[in-house]
Amino acid sequence: SYVLTQPPSVSVAPGQTARITCGGNNIGSKSVHWYQQKPGQAPVLVVYDDSDRPSGIPERFSGSNSGNTATLTISRVEAGDEADYYCQVWDSSSDHNYVFGTGTKVTVL
Amino acid sequence: EVQLVESGGGLVQPGGSLRLSCAASGFTFSSYWMSWVRQAPGKGLEWVANIKQDGSEKYYVDSVKGRFTISRDNAKNSLYLQMNSLRAEDTAVYYCARVELTYDSARFDYWGQGTLVTVSS
Image (cartoon, chains in turn green, brown):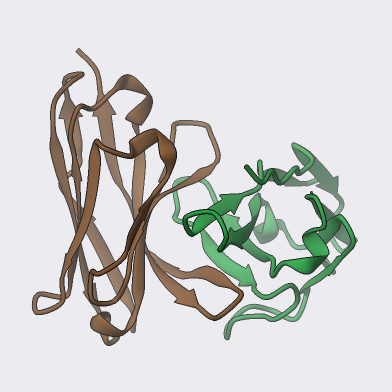
């Protein structure tokens, strides 16, 4: 089955840039989506199809995807960005399997 | 405004059964694939099952095949998950999620608040 690997944690100072990676075999050939989950809350879609943002998501959230790594970038980090972040792809060739990454805890210092 | 509201969670003994429900509003329910996604305590997200708009296609993660059944009632704008032969490892918050599916991409664009299922004796 397809595996997505994320770093367990990323720490960043307010106002700086956080980069969260999502590694997978030839992930650049797939569409990657990113979710933000704050404690006790449901996940929220923040980036879809590698680099698009849903309405209401700040421009500070951006994404890229190439080769074996997709990246979520959070610019000008704020205290409210502290959360868990998950990447996700869809494997249409394997019983419609939806695969999530292992998750990354972003801590704002 | 899109709303998904889950219900039906609770404490159940190993081997027992539970039926989760998800009430949808704010969009044309019959036009979307729908899914259940779960999250064990302190763990990551895991897709469980999904169902096509008319219920004609259903898919499951291997660990629940033969035990869980996803269904929907478009007249009632409702999604269901019948869970049988429950195991301790099924303990999780279960989320109902709307699926935005294109020819080469599928994402969960709206989520409910979740309902907790605890399997324990």
